[in-house]
Length: 161
Image (cartoon, rainbow, N blue to C red):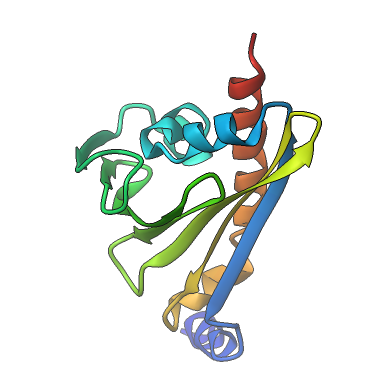
């Protein structure tokens, strides 16, 4: 009982918002990199969460790589959720809404920048709010490491001969 009360008290002081991102340089031209990452289904080949549960059920609505495309997942480890493309700036950025079935949906994004000499800087991130008392999880979850690994996987996929 005391432990639960302590957790609830600590959660009062933990930020309810989160913002996590990572960056990498990929040795491919920006247009080629962007054309790959704007296709949400491609995350199955580099996303840490998708790779951690290859048997999760998936279905899709709309045309991948366009605003409104919706990716649904349902897995034992990953639970249920959706990712919906909400904005695309061709060759520059893609934003999507991630709905995990509780709280407000989070906003995920990819940003590509020309890094010169046929290289592309890719930023992958997420921001959102976690409702009290679940915001206590913001102390324990470091999505930056998952984005970092996912970007390393993306680099491996795109630079493969």
